[in-house]
Image (cartoon, rainbow, N blue to C red; front, side, top):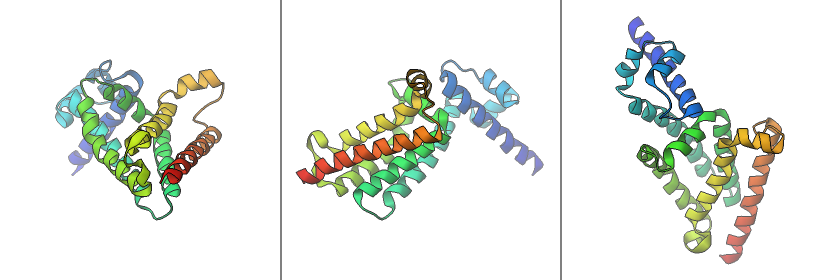
Length: 206
């Protein structure tokens, strides 16, 4: 049992190191040697647990999407008015990204037509489909046209994810830390206002 516990501990160290380095430098710029050095393990352990660097990236993404999916599905499933549902989703996603700083950067890099786009697409499809279904059920007017559910999801996705992906740049441009508690709270309030504007339009159209 002691050997197994040590193996699991090493695996967790490798995942954390890969997450940090993939987020900071990108998949292509990081070697398994660098991951092993940061994790404090022998390079051979990476190939023992994950076979390849691509399998390691897939494991990092699996962990992220499993936890993100749980948070977002809970927000969608809880009872309440449509606008409350959208606010819960915003809260859940913003909180997740705030506590998992590398996630959005990894996804942005790998999902933008790179060689690992398929890894992102496969894991994102279920959440995207669930989001479209929830928005269409809440606002029938979002089933087609320029306010179609898929357009709305893309717009809110961009408003949320870009804030975290480019937080360092925003800090330079605005002179404030966008990830401070106060700024995150203001960002959520801004997104709530966007929800109200969209909902008002859909409800009037409907």
